[in-house]
Amino acid sequence: MEQPSELLQRFARGDLDAFESLFRQFQGEVFRWIVRMVREHGAAEDLTIETFWRIHRAHARFDPERNFAAWARRIATNTALDYLKVARREVELPEDLPGSALGDPGVRRDVRERLGKAFGELPAKLRVAATLALIEEEPYQEIADALGISVGAVKLRVFRAVRLLRKQLKQLGVEP
Amino acid sequence: MNDQKDDDKIRQLLKQNIRPVNQELESDLWPQMLRRLEERPAAVPWFDWALGAVVVLSIIWVPSTIPMLLYHL
Image (cartoon, rainbow over all chains, first blue to last red; front, side):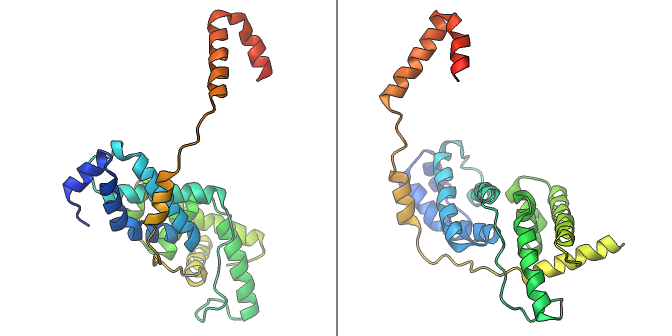
């Protein structure tokens, strides 16, 4: 999304009206990015506020020539990572999905529960990379930009996440 | 080879079983943001500043107090 450079310059100077304009313009985009990572609506709203709080505090460091959306996404990713490092939890799984790989509904439910537990126990960095790449199917380049790492490093994190999940599922008695 | 197959199965399981989330922002968050901006930063009581100053001055003028201070930390 294109932003008038004057607006960004005013924001960088600490103008609250400019910040409000940017907030209104980008709150939805930042929220959607965060909710994909944390997968919890209420937490994502709080983290959107926290992200814009950090953006507001860092206004003097912002270069108006830069892309505001990309900068905001990077800050949002770090904010979500900080949250996930503290708030490890089981990932909520649907009651039933017709296309599941396993036949028996009882077994399916059990596997889903164990999968959610194992996924929730992944280190935050691996979990975010795996969530964005495998579940949300975001392009690797976008994930790399948001995390501030190379595409190769994203692929490595996804690979490590899958390997860890496989190990944890085996420990929980689930053979994939 | 088997490892690769297992990995692919896990990718498939994840895609099929993780709950999709509602990605729509249902309300304007600006009023909450404004409240956050209006919150005053936590003020440090004057007594803490005075105590800090006493510690710094005692370190500068009487360096022999450093071991005692370290002992009490």
